[in-house]
Image (cartoon, rainbow, N blue to C red; front, top):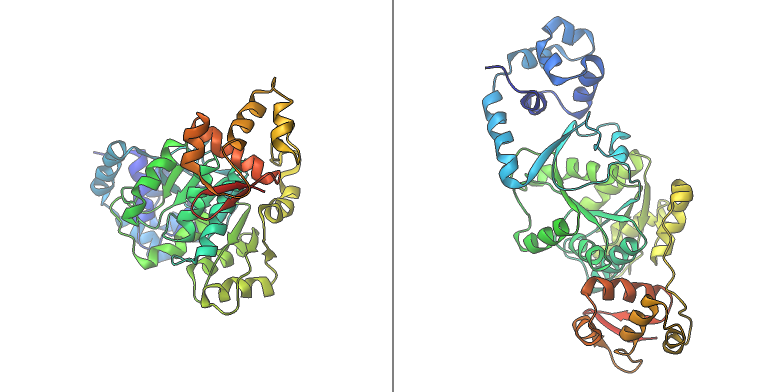
Length: 379
């Protein structure tokens, strides 16, 4: 029985010698993987494919294995997104070595350029974790999609912040689409999918999270985005690989400065010496990326009628539903005491998503301060 079209897509990538660049060359010359497998060794070599690779393509027969892999995708809630599909992300198409296909759980917006990566150390400091969480939350609140690697530490904090900011977040995996790594992030992955985010992997189903997988994963992470924010990175950090790939892909690189007394930030501080954009707040990122977004640049949605005297202003604007909701939140906060987010949600009777969104807008307007441990107070 002849191999299916999708089996040919997977099979061609499994041929020894066919990496993303060779695969792209073959697609540009022959249109589809089926056509590639139908060509002679001489025809393949004539377009620039090494002779050994051309022989490997002609000799490939392991289609049964990839057919079985394709049969697994519905059970996993995943699907195949190919280079020729309409929903293949436009940012990713621009890089020199895009994946010819990837496996997807969840949903992606192929024509949305507003993606920013936030990555860093797996053993982030308390300050680094807070910064990653804040950046994730505020970027999501401004309409950006937050992209990271679902790893421990900075990555997880950025994903969580995006969710709490009421936005979308996408995780690029260094393992098969059937695996969540680290396992303690299973709930985070589930929440990400529930909020219309996505898990993406170009690796075969069943691939374990091996160290050699992550550099190639990082090129996808950077390629999806307009820019990459490095929160904390040691001198020999995988995040620096992501930064290098971002530069090669003509993406903007940002870095959060750190104390020179800790080794956790030597790599990110070095990036700043080499010209990365210094980030102290989300506005530093948005201001740098705004020219690329043009008139579509996301902007913070102003909270209705909230000024310095927030409670009284909200009281005077009873007809605006959001002002009434903001007042209900502010009545649960004080300057002298920090209140946990759960107590705010329970006290004001609003749904968690609304409370998180309005708290973010109140914070951006200088009315509310956020503290470690999901605590809030009036400024």
